[in-house]
Amino acid sequence: MPIVWISLPLILAFACYGEIKARRIPNWLTLGAIALGLGAALIENDLEGLKDSVLGLAIAGGLFLPFCLLGVVGGGDMKLMAAVGAIVGWPMVLRVVCNTCIAGGIISVAIMAWHGVLLSTLANVFRIMVGMPRRNQGLRNPPMVPYALAITLGTLVAVFIQDF
Image (cartoon, rainbow, N blue to C red):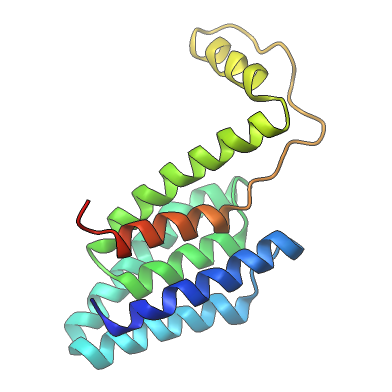
């Protein structure tokens, strides 16, 4: 396990705190984590490590970019995912992204259930899948999912519980 991975819980804890408290992930945290990931990869494994780190950053950030542009996740979430990709590098980034998406789905379902909109949301999804119009045109104030929490859970499971 690369030594820089030890920084992940602290980085992710700051990101979760910022997103839950203020709905923002600070740039100093995400950009600093990107620099840390790239620098550590270069120091530990020369250019090969830097290549893996840049590839991890590009894959993680690139996969989250369309969702950011559509407003599904915020820019801070996208930069945090890119930072995690830079730290874990290739090929671990694939496991991290998959686990993050699974964690995001679980958290989203839990938040919908908590707000009492799970069944109506599932009914609308079913209606869309079979080609019928939705009953309502959306919630006035949809519940927000702090995606830094999903990124944190997905990353920590992928990195520290690798053998399962």
